[in-house]
Image (cartoon, rainbow, N blue to C red; front, side):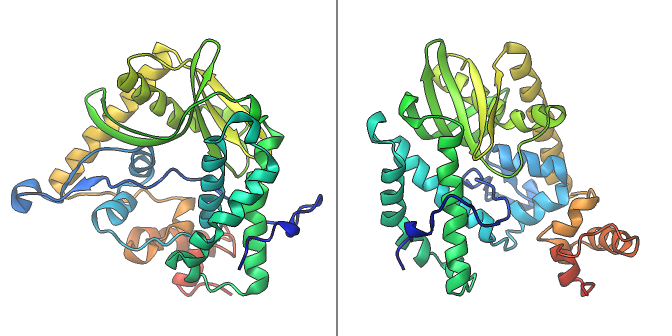
Length: 314
C-alpha cells in the first residue's frame, strides 16, 4: 500500500506520542572464556544502554545479556519511519528540503516499512494502518514547525561515533551534526511531550554525551547540543567543559557499576512506577510484586501492559 499523503490535513487526528529512538547498536561481545568473565563483558556503552542500566540493572540484563524479545510497538515503528524520512531529506541540497519532497521520500521508502516483519507482526487492519501513516507524517511535518530545514547547514547525518570517552568505550549514532557560524551543533530528533525547565537538563544529558564523543572523534568541542521536539519546540544547551565533565563522570560511574554487576552476575531490580510498562515484567518477581501493590492501591493506569501480562486487567 502506498504511503497516502492525501491523509494529510490541517486538523490532526488524535495519536499517542512517539519516540524517535536512537538506532540500536550491539553492546556486548561474547566472552572468550565464559567461566572467567561471568555474565559477559560490554563491548561499549551507548546512551540508551547506559540510561537503561541507570534506570534498572535487571532490565538492562534482560535486554542486553539475555536478549529477551522486546518488539517495538506502533509509536516506535512510526518514529523509525519518520526518522528515516528526515534523514534522507536533510541529505539533500538545502533548496530541496521541502514538505513536497518529504512526501515523495515517504512514498518511496514506505514499502520497506510495510515489508518489515516487525510491522507486519502488528497485524494492523486498513484503518489502523492509515492511522499509523498519519502518526508518522505528523512527526515528519512537525520539523517545519520548529525550524526551516532549508536554513540548516548539515555536516553529517546518522554520524556513527565509536570512541573512548573518559576511559569508557562508547558508541552512538548522532541524528545530525550541523554547522553554524561559531562551530558544530549536535541535533537529535525526538517526540512526545517536551520537558519543563525543571527536567530539561536530564533530557539533554544524552546529546551532551554525543557532544563529548564527537569532541573525541574530531578533536574540537561542539558549541551547542539540542533536542528537536517535533511539533513543539527546540531545547538546547551550550557545550562547556563543566557540563561535559558532568555527563562523562556519570558515564564512568555507570560503566564501573555495570562491570561489577557483570563480574558478580548480580543485577538488582529497581522497582517503581515504570515496572507496569516494562516489557520484561513477566521475568521479574520484584517487578510483579511492585505492579500488584500499585494496582491494589489504584496507582496503575488501566492501559499499562503489565496488567495484561499478570492477568490483572479488567
